Length: 435
Image (cartoon, rainbow, N blue to C red):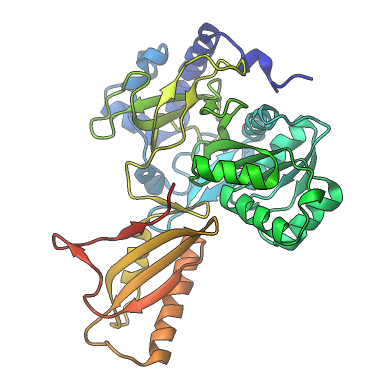
């Protein structure tokens, strides 16, 4: 059986891919110009019209799009199709509490699921497999994307969503799941739980498709050893489509980008200049098939390298390495995007006088699971050892943060002026994770 879902694309020559990209880019720029006034204004400000874009070589003429544009246009400002033609939204948190809302036509969903199907087949998936999807469902793209891809491949799909570990393991053992899709930290937790329950011999998993958060090669090997599988990386952003923008093959030396749907560039994050292949910089994506929410030259803020080195799997699609960091201050904690500015906004919104906006985020990884603490300085006027009063304020901040971030944090009030300053400025983030 073929290891490719769409071999005519996955093994196409660079010339064939380039011709497809040229044609689709020209059409997409015209689509955006005609249907998104915000884009048209940005292009006009640069003195660009669709007639100036004749091939991928002209991509660099187009303006960048950033998270700030998505915030300014929330919710409908970047929509390129009538709402009557849209069938779904997916969402992720934004930098100031405003969510990123991405729209999909049915055609968009079909293409997204094709991308996820390619990832599943690259991990050895076939219609004989049982695919357990333990990413979150709902607004988060992980569950719906891999769920649809699993259907396209013809796997028996278990739409487990995240959490409820005991049930996860029960279904895994009773139904004989062979492919697991979830965050790497949850895969590690499942592995430990299976070991503790003495069920290792009943696990039939052969592969795992793990993404949505950073993970090291050591973590990969540990998961592979404990679950007896091969662990594959997958990459995506809600703004672009979701998981499946790129995926790993059996070589495990980077993720193949689905170039028939996304054009990747690497730029200097300071100057915006496009860098040659092989150089490290910020990853930029242009969606060339998305109908409802097509982003052109979207700055991901992920730092990585592209490579066209020949791959032993036979796929000719360009590879991206694992993201090597960020060009902004975003953290990914348990698969959720967290910006320090979001925490600052929450603290500033609490006008009780008991706290100051001085805070520190401490992130660590304990037993393969991210821990997330926020220390907040009490104001000098409030400084107290009244445990009940402190607990009430901590709960108020905890609840507000969960509402804004969609993730729980352990909040601790600390004494005034105890958060370390460096050159007069507080050190906002301490990330102890070895990733």
